[in-house]
Amino acid sequence: MSRRTTMPTHGSTSASARRQPPLPLPLALTCALLATFTVLTPLLSPQARAATVPAAEAAPHPHPRARKKTPTRGEIAATAALTQLGVRFSWGGGSRRGPTRGIGRGSTTEGFDCSGLTLYAWSRAGIALSHHTGAQFRQGRRITLKARRPGDLLFFGGGRGTPTHVALYLGGSLMIHAPKTGDVVRRTNFLRSPYYRTVYRGTVRPG
Image 1 (tube, one colour):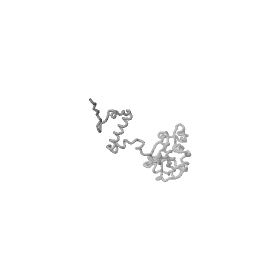
Image 2 (image 1 turned 180 degrees about the vertical axis):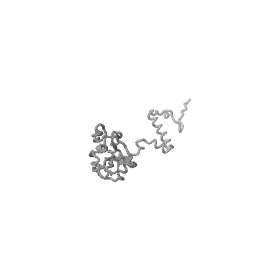
Image 3 (image 1 turned 90 degrees about the horizontal axis):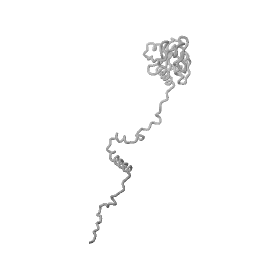
Image 4 (image 1 turned 120 degrees about the vertical axis):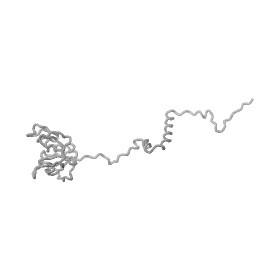
């Protein structure tokens, strides 16, 4: 009896052809995930597609000129003065290093008088001022009240003579100053104060 040899028909696959070596597991997972991502991405909303972009690519690049603003000397002085809020008034007190014991009735109290506070604040900005209100009135440029900027010195009192009080402008209508014996360094709305509005003498910008 002759043996019938069965020839593979067109389109059939032999057993050896079906036995393809399996892909390594990590590579197989990668291919499966890539195929899923390719199919699903077009179906996502614009917001969801944006979320698939790597953070380094999605984040906007900062503008080369978008740098932190350097504070002015006046702003440095104003910031320095604010660190002394609540410090006691001391007649003759204050130096470029901070509060000190004063003289006369201020000899037993460590703190600032009005010109001692402004002297200290502006020393933080690199400007040396005298420890005297009248002298500080002449140590800088006269500025109109409307042109005032943080750190400018505000002078009050004394009639037509030497001003008797100095404060440091903060912004808006606020100033910071060491008012008088028994008080502390504080902020005051000088434009709404009936007293300070009537005795205002001028504004000086040190430096």
